[in-house]
Length: 192
Image: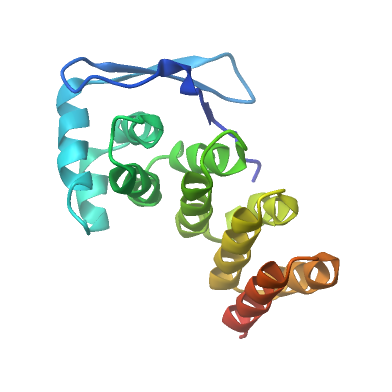
């Protein structure tokens, strides 16, 4: 199944807690879409993100409308880093067809921080399962060492023969010892 690859544009800038957020997302199959992130939904998401752990059911309860809110919060530099990273991870728990492509766009965008991109890689595997293998595998060639490490681990958690083959093929091509180690750990995790 091809992923639409929603790209969350950072041009929205910092968001005010009182005002509704306007987030523009672009799909590869259509023109830009505008999604409104109402203030109350944003405030509820911020309350959940302030907690160190939140059950996935809390995010599912907010519904698919929270996807653009979480994407905007992940980009909002006025939000504490820990909450921004939790926003990325929370996307894996939202039952929405937009969650996976949003995570993929965050992971693939080299303009995003490595922390956001690595968290998006882990969340993408959790969100899409085996459907994420192709998108994750493509990031094994990313310029950022931390992204390659995170992707190797995310793939290893998915397991399966296809993942094993992908990791085994990548090991001899990898020059960075810490990434080779992550690839080996991914293989260990992928063991049947």
